[in-house]
Each structure stands twice: as C-alpha cells, then as structure tokens.
Image 1 (tube, rainbow, N blue to C red):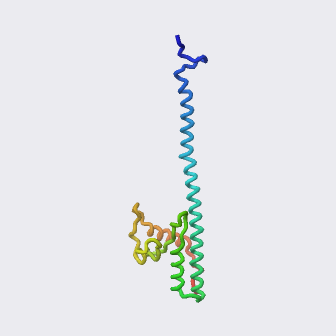
Image 2 (spheres, rainbow, N blue to C red; image 1 turned 45 degrees about the vertical axis):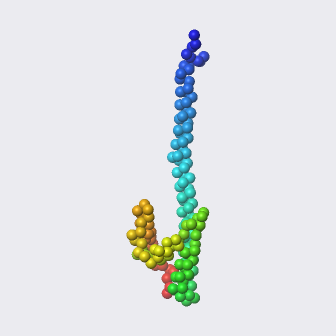
Image 3 (tube, one colour; image 1 turned 180 degrees about the vertical axis):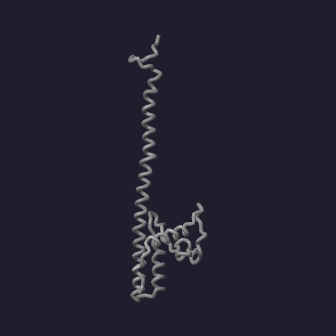
Length: 161
C-alpha cells in the first residue's frame, strides 16, 4: 500500500501549496512594486526632466525676444521690425526628439499671433478653440499668465523709455 505522506510526515497534497503560495506571493509583490512604485517614479522623473528642458528652452526664447526688444528700444530697428523678426525667429524654433515641438504666440484676448502649424488661426480669436478632449488650451494659458502676472505684479524693467 502506498503511503499518502512524505517521509517527513508532510502530506503530498499540501506540498504543492507550500511551494506555490510563496512563489505566487513573491510574484504578486514584485508586480505591485513594479507597477505601483517603480513605473510611477520613472514617469515622474521623465516628466520633471521634460519640464526642465522646456523651461530652459522658454528662457532661451525669452532671451531672444528681449534682444529684439532691446534693439528696438535703442533705436537700432523699429518696433514693428523687432516684432516681425521675433515672430519669425520663434516660428522657426523646433525642439523634441523629432523636432515636432514648437512655440506659438497669442495675446491676452486670446488672439493667435503666430502658430507654425496652424497659420489658419493667425489673427483669429481662439478663446473657443478646444482640443479633442474639450480642453480650452489657449484660454488656460492666458489664465496661467494672468495668475503669474498677479503674483509678480512689479514693473517690467525691459520697457522702452
């Protein structure tokens, strides 16, 4: 007659459970660590890096705009020429891995001043423009600028005298 127990008196039927349960729990903990900790941290670090890069690119664009503005203030070029040169310069700037990211210019109305991929919007009121998700991107940008201006309500030192 075949015994239903192992030589250490562990029933053969429970042996697979003693192996499967710890392995399964280990795999579950590993997967939870990957999906709940590691992936969100990687995503956050990548987004922080992208934000920092965009901030530096924006500072560079502002520096270029300030140069045209200073030239106009010094009388080296007219304000209209400075405006056209600044718009032309920003229209050509591209960044990102495929050079598909860009800058656009709109005023506080918001009316589109320059958009490199949507010239049909130039000169138009874009307050009602919505992305496919229904978000009013241009209105949101204007509101962020207004909030920032309210927080930093000091005179601009770059104005022509």
